[in-house]
Length: 291
Image 1 (cartoon, one colour):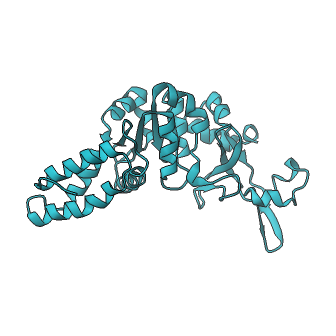
Image 2 (cartoon, one colour; image 1 turned 30 degrees about the vertical axis):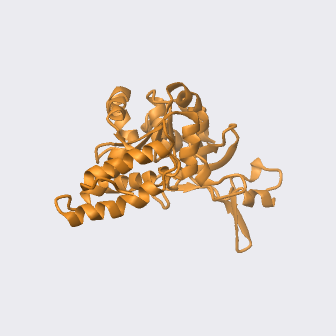
């Protein structure tokens, strides 16, 4: 339906999405019609359409979940479409709508764009995690092909484990505003049980006025790569954040640092990295040993 909708085509053109990239990600359009899917299925009344989140049954009426939205298919690791994301054209809420959890689609286990990015992730031994579909698409359009996004949910340990099986380096990329910092901290908390010795997890913050989509379109691949190279290691991000919350000039503040850091380090299953973080905590707090 995309090629039949000038509004949808104009939206993607306005975001600098090429036809090649649109085809690579299978971008589409859901018409502004309550039952636009009906001609596509032999039996529009089949229960499987409800189970997979394509249609909604309510008060005896059945209608398409996605209407008047540009569509982003979500693929599993084998390239099968298991769900969709849809962005409203014009005004309307919610701005982004995802398929619900289904027997095929579990948001905490899937990453948008992973099927398309997996070769680049393995070749470069680095995965970049961003927050939105258009971030992944814009980065790919501009030559950063190892980017994936979470699917309307926070990062999970399973996401981290999946990516660290493919690459030695993982970089979380967030906006530089308060919301981005909070999302980064949640990603750090979820990464601690999954990080392994010999693997490197870092956190990258763009200027507050940018997200990866706007940044790479405005400044290009090389500028984005330069920001990537300045990404903060997990240990530095953890300690910098905690030390900003306490008064490091007082014994009470340094004691508070121990209280905050110890449970986080205790979640780690990477023995060498955990031991190094214990030593860093001991040095920062002024104690010889922190158990």
